[in-house]
Image (cartoon, rainbow, N blue to C red; front, side, top):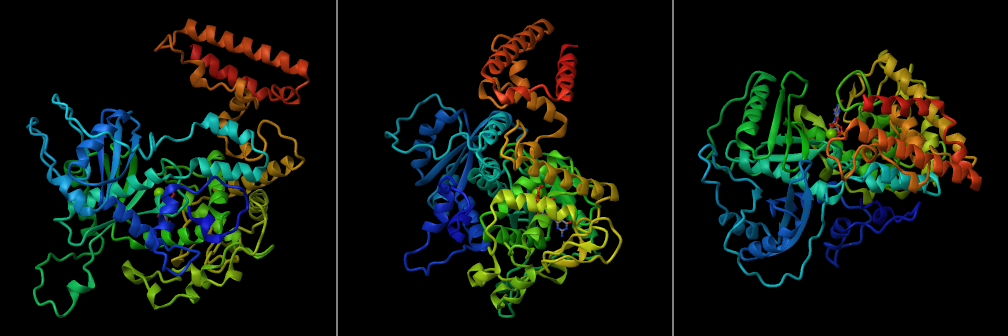
Amino acid sequence: MSVLLQTGKLYLLRKPFSKSCSKYIFHRKKSDVPRKFISFDEIVAQRRAEARQSLVVQVNSESSFNELHGYCSKYATINDIHHYKNSAGEHFMLIEFSSEENLNNVLQSCSSHKKEIDVMGVQSPFLWFRATSVKEKYAQNVTHLAVKDGSLSVNEDVLFEELMNCSSVSEQIQMLYDRTVLNDIGVRLRYMVARQLETVFSSLYANIKVQPFGSSVNGFGKMGCDLDLVLTNTLTDDLTSQKNRLVYQEKKSEGGRSPWQRHMELVGALLELRVPGATRVQKILNARVPIVKYSHDLADVDCDLCCNNTSGVYMSELLWQLGALDARVRPLAGAVRRWARAAALTNAHPGRWLTNFPLTLLVLFFLQQPASGPVLPPLRRLVELAGKEDTRVAEENLNCTFLRDLNKLPTESYSQNTDDLQTLLFKFFEFYSQFEFQDKAISINEGRPVRKPNSLPLYVVNPLEPALNVSRNVSYEECERLRLEVRNAAWHLESCLDGHKSDDWGILGLIEQKASRGLKKLLRVGNSHRLVSMKDLFNDNDELEPSAQGIRSKLEKFKKTEKLTEASDVTRGDKKSEMKFKNSQSAREVYRIRRNKLI
Ligand code: GTP
Ligand code: MG
């Protein structure tokens, strides 16, 4: 996000930095000493403050903006309004007011839905805008929506076409990142979901804090990523100070993990009963860290909530910092994460395969290798440079102390390598195709391979608990597949170096799901006028439910267009088109899918 301004190094021309990014910079006073890096704590504090002075209001459509703006302006000053739709197509406005007091004025004017007797009143920052028969007149609104349809993800067909038209693999990697990274409204909404839990649970848990962690905040998140949340209710130093003689009577929480399991059970029940928008609540209480999973239908995010696991937040902080040190880290990790998903090396469900977190550590570790100058320092260096102000201790006395202010990091400890993204991606695959997984462990603490303490197939040292392996679940077969896939990927990228752009050139051949690769290739064929998605093939204005006849005629139409285009391409001597049907596997795949649809 802020890397561009932070490092001052530009490896590629990038689109202008986002409004939210500039906000963090320009909020600083002129008298502030110029700094290259903003700390994670500053970003989090700003996001939490934004959430405390924001509301999410369900509206009829984006044209409700004027009325909503006019109505809310009667009570408070508005900073800006962001519009988004959830996956059910419902419209929402996220309104940021100018202060928390301002927001409280609005909240005092809110009412409950009295008509329904089966509704139990609850106050939270998620509201709806009731229609009225008496239209009020509002002054002419000169402001506009800050964002319209803010949570819309990029269309994959469009993305693939844009990637196809890039001039280099580096540009592809950067574009993939820019088009898919979690955007400002995505982050705002995630902090709103956290804020909602703080609001609803505040009378039950003293000093409650619900913090997002994981990819929603560590800089590696993409649009639609899940939201990891941790609930803490530790008493502040002031409250535990000897000077305070009046002390709350409290309940004991004894018996190892079991009280936490019971709390999570309670939290799960509260989510079901008291939290608007929370649905599909699932309690997973026997895990090492008990969690409650739920979907937030109004914010359109899947959430994993746990209790007292602040090390997850410190881990996110560490990843965020390493990602902020150099502008190439996050785009590279984004491409690797996407490649791994396409190669089915990672999977959203837990199992004997890799997940995004250890995979990201693999990327960071590679970037620490000094072969052609390290891009990132080892964590050990950040620990050595830590001062008193960096001391952080998580639950079970876990020491999470490392340098927080990256401005204090000597410049020679990072960005010592000037490879472009394409070279880095190729070297990443090459590095892991030669890595001795059977003897060596990956440790971002040391920044070099270390001896494996046991014979587990893949060993990725947990940076904050070095005695633990974060990839202990990975099976021998999955590790072997990783080795095979990195070799294939290196081979694929190398074959692109001759400058010839086939229809899966560069990262296109790495990020398409294998199952649909052949089909997509066939349908895309590198030309925008021939870009056809299966959706278009079976969806026309005239029909809601495609009939077999309708589909057949569409297929005929499509086949004819294909033939025509092909013929004209051949006349033009277009080299790309010659490659179109070279893959008989693709043709078979199209046939199979067409046949299935017809039947
Ligand atoms: P995606 O959700 O896949 O986008 O990535 P993520 O980074 O959010 O990963 P995930 O949701 O699986 O985990 C959330 C966070 O929990 C990670 O970012 C880590 O900070 C932490 N985490 C995940 N797996 C482990 C693990 O095995 N050990 C420890 N200590 N922490 C973990
Ligand atoms: Mg996550």
